[in-house]
Structures are given as structure tokens and as C-alpha cells.
Length: 184
Image (tube, rainbow, N blue to C red; front, top):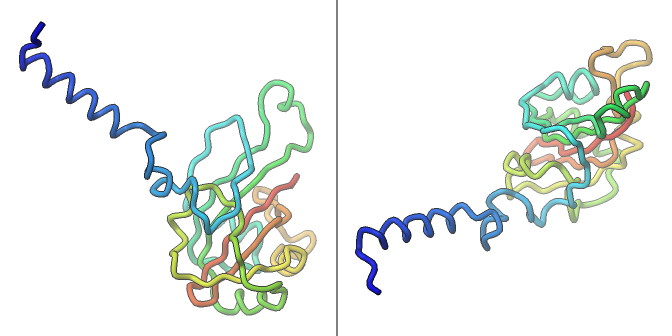
């Protein structure tokens, strides 16, 4: 049985479109950041949809010592739903990339533990904000948590400080990459 050309052309078009849109196709993972070897695995979860936001307040209100001039974050509550809505002290996570002044980087570098072999495991949608030619140093999170938060009693109640769990800075690109998780 021969199929007419009018039948074959639409079938080929559908097959081509289906192949192009396949999220499991080879070569697609690097462009969407899922397997970028520069970063540790992204391990945070939420049952709510998250989005990339450009927000300076997420950095500067939580960590005034950061003095960010540009920043992109993905943040969420770890759990939600009926059982967790009654939780008095919910857990939140935040991953972000911020442009910071040299003074902030110099202060953070006092807590450097060495060259960053791998950057903190930020949300893969933030990878595009980290140029590949930047050189990063890993910062001891205890050092960052000691110098970046607001003075006791002076923080913004809408943007409570979260403990930084991993942080790296690039002096040449004036960037900071961090992950934070905790109960504000």
C-alpha cells in the first residue's frame, strides 16, 4: 500500500517537532543547565512552582552586609499543604547569584577556604547568570553568616535572614553564588 504524499508530509512534520521538543534528547541538558559541571547538584525541593526573580531585597534585606547591586534568586518553602500549613516555623530555601561590590568580596575573602572546585548547588535556571570565565573562591559559611546578616533587632521582618549553607565569590566578575536554608 502506497501512502500519498499528502499523508507522509504531515506525519514527518509531526515526527520532527516531537523530536525537537523531547526534553530527554541528547545535547539538551547543557542548554537548560541541568548538568552544568561547574555546580554542585541542586538538592532543594518544594511542592510549589518556583520562578527566577530579579530581587535586590532578597539579598540586601536578608544580608545587609552583602550590598548587592543586582541579583537573581529562586526561593521557596520546603513543604506546603494541609499538614504543613499549621507549622509554626516553616523551612525555606533560597539559591541566588548577586553582583556585589569589591568591598563585600574583600570582606568575604577573609573567610576563603580555597579555590572553588565546584560552585554551590543553585537552581539550574540560575546557571545562566554565572559567566563561565569567572574564577571563584569558596567561603566558609560560618564567616559569611557572621558578617552579612543585619545587627540583632535591626532586620526587616518581611525578609528574615536565612543561614547560608554554601557560598562562593568571584573577585574578577564581582559575583556571589549562594544557597541558604532555614527557618527565618
